[in-house]
Length: 289
Ligand SMILES: Nc1ncnc2c1ncn2[C@@H]1O[C@H](COP(=O)(O)OP(=O)(O)OP(=O)(O)O)[C@@H](O)[C@H]1O
Image (cartoon, rainbow, N blue to C red; front, side):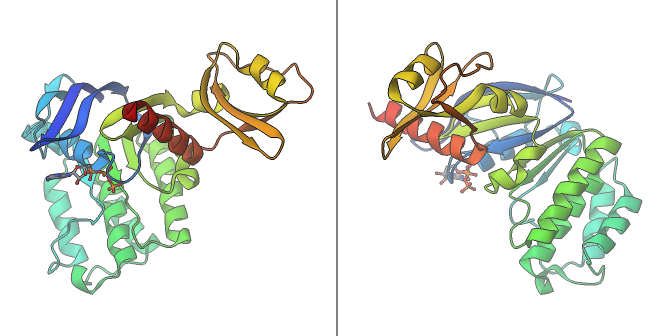
């Protein structure tokens, strides 16, 4: 399904939490939706799911405005951070409700995933640990087979092996039943290899939207003598400059991968988590000017 976001703004009283966000996504793909605390990720995902209305601008899925659109909303599964399951119901009852709501609900997959995550159908939500409730969210998202499936910090309380299982299932499901998965997470470097596209929000503004492969090939950290660095970064966009002891450092984005010609220079890949920190810092500086 295609998602088109145009000049989207969300305002709570005087406060703009989303500020003229525009982008398009053409699924299927696994998308990393990133930003610091309070950047506006959950606010955006609530609007994309049709649950909350924007203040201005538009969000369309396959050309249809999403807000309160029952048919479109059935095509979107939004797994919120807290799971949002009623506390008094059992795992089995959650799965039965899912079956009624999601047109593509895959019962066989849900049963298989219950075993993989060691969940008991008779357990009530209120008796389950945070990690177990998160696992139920993951099972709901994957078995919904919704063409747009959103995971907003889906693994609160899940240990490393549970998260690893989630990543493996995501890739496996994407191969079996391709869809658009949007994953919002703070465990960025752990998940980054999954992403095909990356969006970064900062204080309600979209500050980066690029394929992950392009980020990896076009943005590098370069270390060495100042004059050699200057020659290397010429024509590129400098994201960061710094110095450690006698060594100069720059993070730069070039349109084309650029080979080094100066022997003193060392190139390093920039991890996504570090890039998020650097881009947010630049934006903060820009806004405070
Ligand atoms: N219903 C609301 N009323 C008023 N302000 C809100 C409301 N919902 C969110 N906000 C504000 O909008 C801003 C963005 O919040 P949001 O939850 O979207 O950020 P986030 O990027 O998901 O953060 P986190 O990573 O911490 O979950 C915050 O300052 C928050 O206080």
